[in-house]
Image (cartoon, rainbow, N blue to C red; front, side, top):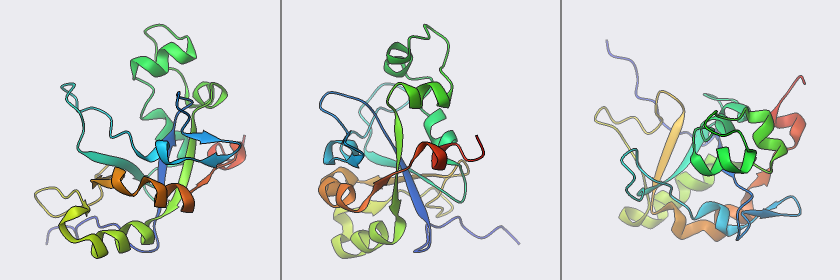
Length: 161
């Protein structure tokens, strides 16, 4: 029997990495809409078409930060040259993690129909093996996401340190 599809559920928490960009993605400990607008790039450099999140039950917040450590702009800001910075250094350089209830995303997808939907693979999984969740046109609700998200503290991002 094949394993059950990995589906995003109402009880999940989503992580979104926010960057110390200009314009800022957060300010005074509060997520801003711009933090939920950038869909990034595909591996071949084309503009992405989904807003990326990670599911908390699959990946700790420090690993969510680490997913961006190979990005050229992250390495430049952290001054690590060609070496990827550690999640701890990224945090010290202004990168942080916002938490958002998945219930809000699921409800928005149901309410918006084809305008907003979860990315699914060929088997119907909406959560990747690495905990990644993509939301097509998710940037269109950046205001909503930012109003309901909260920034994790350093202790929440790196528990036990």
